[in-house]
Length: 350
Image (cartoon, rainbow, N blue to C red; front, side, top):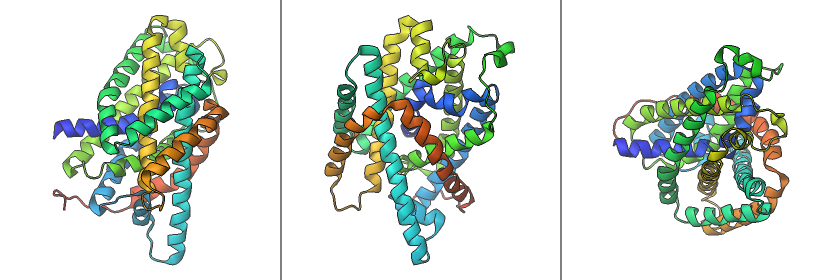
């Protein structure tokens, strides 16, 4: 039971720690740029993650939900034709967001290889697209296996650079290093959680057959704690970066290469692995959602991977900075509906 619970936790963490997280772009945008208040934002966001993941797993488990459309029907209701039409439209937008975020991961992979190894962006993106085809062709087994191996390495490395970075700053003067915004850090932390949940729910649905009711709460707590600790580590690593972070595609890559150049190869492996785990999770989530489509799974898989290559040329940070906050607002309604949906405790799966 413990082994299965850890496997599921790694799959969820692997879906969360993608290019945006491990590169520092997400942490900068939603937390770091709010100064010391960003730490509070990380704490709030992590708590909400735990609560919502626990509730989503219970809804999925109790209603034997197989795709996002069924999940939306459960939390929004589908008693009349108008609601059914609304759910279809919402589901289309969610699928588009998942697909575009999949493209962002492909772009991030190509960007990193381009900036560090001077490999052409399109070639780097093509490498990840091919890997996604190979892994996703094995369905959920491939995702669990890759998360089982890669996620522990990601966690250890982020913890390591976080602990090394904290030695280089004066904790008492932490505010001195921070950038300040005149907007609400609390709203930003909620937006971070809400858009991530849009991406995470398809993965939680795909884990339906693996989860047991007694595992749900411990997994939610583990994910909450691990996410909080890793986000703080990334936050700390960005302190004292000596250039404008806004101009950096991957702030953590810059921090590692300037402060800990002996770790740049290891970090390269870590960032690429984190992008890979999220890309395959997103791809699986999208394919799970369109299973009722007349086009077969394999055709969809090849189509989205091929399209991702030219789309990746738009740019990694531009895609994140524009799309993530927009979908964060759209995800707020979903989180409220999830929290207010009634569930009952069960001990045996039917």
